[in-house]
Amino acid sequence: MRNSNDITLIGAGLAGSLMAIFLARRGCRVTLYERQPDMRSHDLPAGRSINLALAQRGIRPLKAAGVFEQVAGLLIPMRGRMLHDEHGQTRLTPYGHKPEEMIHSVSRPGLNKLLMNAAEQAGARIQFQHRCEDVDFENANVVFTDASGARQSIKSHALIAADGGGSAVRQAMVSRLGVRSVEDVLPHGYKELAIPADANGRHRMQREALHIWPRGGYMLIALPNLDGSFTVTLFLPNAGEPSFASLNTPEAVLAFFQQNFPDALKLLPSLVNEFFEHPTGLLGTVHSQRWHVNGHTLLLGDAAHAIVPFHGQGMNCAFEDCLILDDCIDKHGGDWQKVFADFETQRRPDTEAIAAMALENYVEMRDVVRDPKFHLQKELGFVLEERHPGVFVPRYSMVMFHHLPYSEARRRGAIQQNILDRLTHGVTRIPDVDMQLADELIAAQLGDKRIES
Ligand SMILES: Cc1cc2nc3c(=O)[nH]c(=O)nc-3n(C[C@H](O)[C@H](O)[C@H](O)COP(=O)(O)OP(=O)(O)OC[C@H]3O[C@@H](n4cnc5c(N)ncnc54)[C@H](O)[C@@H]3O)c2cc1C
Image (tube, rainbow, N blue to C red; front, side, top):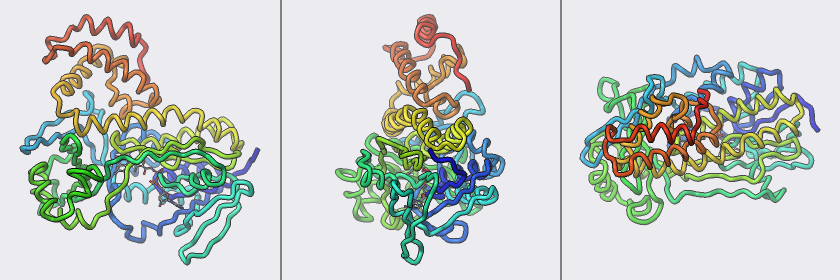
């Protein structure tokens, strides 16, 4: 058992910086090691999810860490999905049926810088340009290379690895301890593009929405930024037709956009340059057999359980990790063995559930949203929520606007989907739904206990 207040955190990204705030505020001596230069004084390369959707699950930990008031100034509310069809027609589908049920677009670097500032103000120290290379778990040594390329070894007490989906610490657990870790790479990648603001600095499409151009095997999405621009992301297969491999000339890219996204094409003045200059990102799910070693090392956030981005939950889930880890420290003090073991036991079923739901949502976003049945069931979901508040809560709402564990959201979501399928069988309009049957099914399968918000 180790009892110490000295914490080494790897990765000053979103989870690492937030965790540093929680730890420093409870009096721990925290040092964060980040491989990149300080983004507050250096421009970092573009091309990696410039903005993100923040939901209630991510907001609660930010509030608990005392930083949400500052974060609020970075947010743009998104009240629903704005669907764009092949002819440029649009349709807004609200995310929830209550005014407060919305998500928020936030700049990744803006949020990350704010969290780094808050971590330093709370007393944490950040060492930039320190890349973790390896961990000697037996002797509790972490090996880094610094900006000059020199290698150095640091003795650590408790080591928390928030070094993202490609975690060097997880790789060391694999190579040194034989831990099994599977990285399920999706056959689809992503590329970021930009819709600039208009001449008056205003947004060229509706600002308070997440825009989606669903096209079956692929899709385009756009989230608003505070400066009037939108960050657009194209999700497309890596190989086959059409794919990032097949769109290999400016003509092919333009023809593809003209055919599939004609209204977006008009708003993307630098499409061809950006398409060929911006990197194509990988997407995948990480399943690691273990998250902690000997009460010394713990994987947190994407390092433990990276997921595909289609539920907009990776960061939200990583922030929730920080809050749950902080609760575990409350429970077990500085007994890191117990803290880390309790964290993994509590959290694993939920991260597995959100990983599965994120994959399911990919099909929903790129495909099912085009199906009239989807819209009927969405509407019916809201009607049933009004009839049975807190009992029938659409799965999307349970994940985005509530705090019940992801595994419970998934379990209840499956029951509700069966009820919706049954009620909409052979039905095309809400007035034709058998509401008495709905009430009976809900009472029998969901009971009357309300979920906490
Ligand atoms: C296209 C896309 C869209 C997304 N959209 C959303 C969204 O809308 N909502 C949402 O909630 N989530 C979204 N996500 C997921 C979200 O980006 C991640 O879940 C989140 O960034 C995880 O935070 P993290 O701190 O665990 O990892 P990261 O943010 O990856 O941070 C890891 C940090 O560790 C540093 N690092 C890495 N290796 C080392 C090393 N060897 N040594 C030292 N430092 C190191 C990195 O430089 C980085 O600063 C999206 C992801 C992608 C790819």
